[in-house]
Image (cartoon, rainbow, N blue to C red; front, side):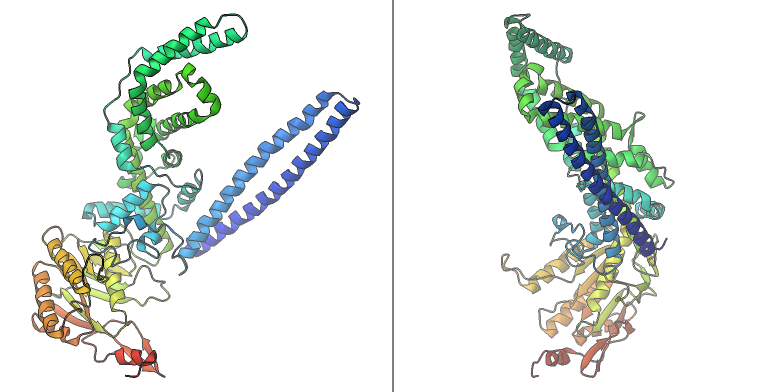
Length: 594
């Protein structure tokens, strides 16, 4: 399926439905008005003139009630159509360079101390996370963010790839999930809910549940008998005294149960509906089959169990109603609810963690599948098992840039080359190249497709020093911030897979002499650990690092040219060292006399 044509056709279909529902909405509203007017006229004839029987009003009343029910159904269907239109509008925006700022930015995941998160625009407006995230739950966002912040093992990444391939064409499933329930996201915290589900049981006396039910029924019966003057008030007072004794004895345990539910048992509607929808699917990839199996417990679908908890929480919410408050002690309302909630937790609480983990993992996979569907020109990378770092890409692009604007380049670390020194003018594409390599490596080891015609990569840990800044609050200069990040990168090389380092304008905060010596030492130390990577520079003296180890270092560059007083770039990576700089031309272009 062509994503642009498919999204456009589906959006038009939903827009036609929305227009039809809107017409029905107006028509039924008019009929309701006419029915109300007719009822008023009949009421005048019946009660004002006595010309007809008052029972005739039952007919317009029945018609009005039927119209109200029909009206609500049309409103619900119109709302779904409007949400579907927004769903496809968002999809169409992602196929054009207008998606930035309209998705889930993931601001809460931003971490300036992370070794590449801020440098590669992982979170925030216009970020990789905003391009990817198609989640309805907080736990789904957490899972997707964790995949972007750390590479998976090869077996896990390949399993995700297989699942993403299977989910990619299933647009119906993604549409259904987007339209489930209300247009809200579930805020259930996986860690807190799992801890609540596995906490030690709060025990109630076994005979207390039937006793509470007997007291509640007896209290209501004696109260009604008193109002009917069939019994004195004393039987009701005796039962009420027993109720207050039970409330006093159980107050600590009831408060503990209800507090746990308040913190961890809410926002379950979306999760229940999501689970119920997934239970209808059948999957072929082992990863998706495992997730589906995790939603079955003792032969009973998880959706029913979660829905039951949701109903109990809804009943708990109704405790604040004025009428319920008045009769709550008589019914032992909170006490019976607490015992029912604790019984649910005893039977199903241990499974909450696995249910939420399955849902969050599915949402993360579905987000990657949506990206693969919307970017059919991208490829799935070949993930090779190797103890040494390797990275070979054909037509590599920056995944956050529009394909129509992004110039692809071939990048390869092989034949002994483990370092590319990238020289070039300002704005020529050096930093973009580093971000393209880093982001695509992150996507590859998250299990996603990548913005390239072909990519083969070994397990790599990405580390970047691109956007380090000074900090007045922390009393840090830019140079100190940069060398601190480099220290972090060096520490990363001591564990895990080889590092892919991305160093932009290495040691630009010091003089050329110290810069060359320091940069050569840093690079040599990184390469000795088996790391591979890029160093960009304006300082052509740094291109001489190649002299230290000619077999492992290659110089490449980006060029620019002056055309009728304008600087033009082709953004094509070329071998060798750049031969000119555009700094003076740029200064003159903005009106500086240099």
